[in-house]
Image (cartoon, rainbow, N blue to C red; front, side, top):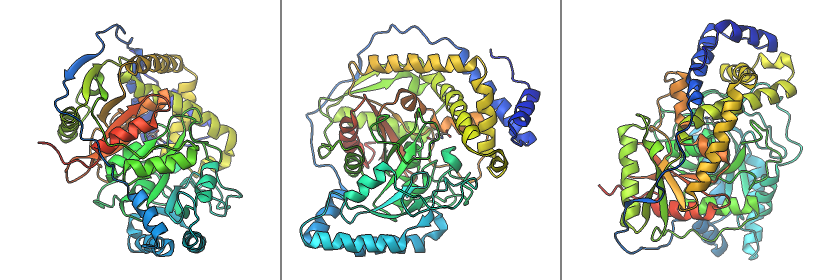
Amino acid sequence: MAEKLSENIIRDTATAVGVALSEEDVAYISAQFEGFSVLENEAADMRYSADEILYHAQSVGHGGKARCDLRDLVSDLHAGRATSLRVTEDCFERMTTRKDLNNFISENRDAGIAAAKRADVLLASGRGGELCGVPIAVKDNINVKGLPVTCASRIFSEAKAASSAECVKRIEEAGGVIVGKTNMDELAMGSTDESSAFGAVKNALDITRVPGGSSGGSANAVAARQAVCALGTDTGGSIRQPAAYCGVVGLKPTFGAVSCDGLVGFVPSLDTIGVLAPDCDSAGIVFGVMSGRKLAPANAELFGKTIGIADEFASGEIASDEVRKQFENAIAFAAEHGARIVRVRLPSFTAALAAYHVLSSAEAATNILASVPKNKLASTGGEVRRRIVAGVLAGGCELYEKARNVRERLCREYAEAFGYCDVLLSPTSPTTATVLGASRDPNKSHYGDYFLAPASLAGLPAASVPFGDTVLPVGIHIVGNYGCEQTVLDIGSALEYKAATK
Ligand code: GLN
């Protein structure tokens, strides 16, 4: 067992780095470090009987055309059945009528309308790139020239970005119309969007609930059709978890596949920029533009695919009954449509979330303390201040080495699993969208990323797709091998929105 971290050490560290903590914050960090004791457990023996088949393929494949809202819209725009001006104005209209959702920190009305008009001219003359005239929202930690970049924090001046992030430049070159900057957890730390300095975001499907975070504004804007797609960032789950809570698709690409140039980094060794979209194929198109690696249209086919399910996904009482039921339905659906479902073991999985918090807090604290003047730290919210102090403590103790070891072991375990699996499947989030203002027990609220942080530590591509016919959406998490976004989205497009089989 890890020695309990004394509350005095937490207080002294806070004083030393010049960060004010409440007694509640001190207790929170202390409880969090108790949770890190999971890092002390040696991972189980790696040798196991791989490739044990859990379900046999029962039918031939159905193949099929994936849903693609974006492809349909682009063909309507090119055929003159729709205009970008109209589609963009509709988004702005919904931004006005659903202002209560608080999805946007800044709106790009004038420049957005001008861009839409330019797109219509191009479209009318048969030109225009892949995203010509398509309204797209951008999370407020990614630079868009001429717009403020606040990261939902008071520590940044409202100065406007002098140039756009590399991925935004590519989207604009492809004709995308930027409609605004979306709300998020402060500095991308969090899972609910409640820590924003600009106020919490309310879930479009149920305004008493959170949209998830930290890319909650982006996911919710897509759900509320205030943009066709949105850019988000995912360091330990921040695209996939809000996608699940809002009933949209969220794609976190392979680490490094999309340039992070022009992103205000949270944890540079884990940060990725990805997409929130109405469906997998749409996400793939935007990913293709941002990465320069164009994907084929998604092929909604499960036949012949090998899907791995890790024992560790089921460990403990992590997922709620409702989520577990949808996950089982998804597995049954995949098996019925010809996928081979096999068992894999990822013994380090259960310690990965603690490793993520140790490593990410340590790296984030180093960055913030090096780049933010001390007098500005006072204006940050509790979550940021707690992470700084926890990060300084985590970076300086033996937990750090243990967390690094977990990360290394996990990468080897994934490599072994991808030796015989196309993808791994789990639930995205243990629960459906939680209510606003729910309890902030660190070892409960951080469980939200239990299924997600491991793929971040390994740098693997992953997506969340909505599955089933529940009142509040449930997401299924699909993880692929390095560079295999296409496989992730193909399988995702076969699963997305499928009504439950039972
Ligand atoms: N929810 C996770 C955290 O709080 C992930 C954040 C992220 O991916 N930006 O750290």
